Amino acid sequence: MGRIIAIDYGRRRCGIAVTDILKISANGLPTVETPCLMDWLKNYVANEDVERILMGEPRQTNGLPSENMRRITPFVARIKKELPNIPVEMVDERFTSVIAHREMIAGGFRKSERQRKGKADEMSAVIILTSWLDSRSGL
Image (cartoon, rainbow, N blue to C red):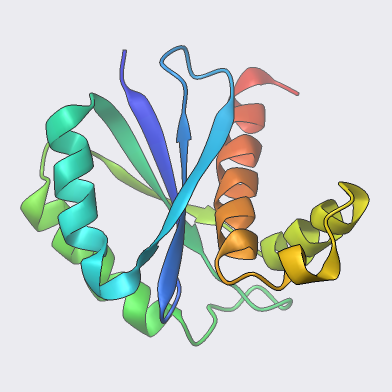
């Protein structure tokens, strides 16, 4: 039984979340600088059993792909080429950044903590992964 990784792909850095072995919960990992993401993925896959990679699919409120898709599409193709045994699935990530900021406020994060670079990216990846897990469990 492998883990599932979720990625909130950004221009500068990427939020990462991963499931536990039983695929019950999603846990955030430290963000990874975007240029280093493929090396990070290869290293992680070499050390952990990974069953699937979920890539956040940014969409506008009208459902059309957002501007960031022009960076994500080539990266997904690269994952499929360099890690061919791991399926990659796109997951709608609309509003995850807004939800992440609201969750940080609700969780009592101070303003300085909320503004820390990467925290919202990490939480967005957790939200992407949690929503995918919930959709599979019938919740």
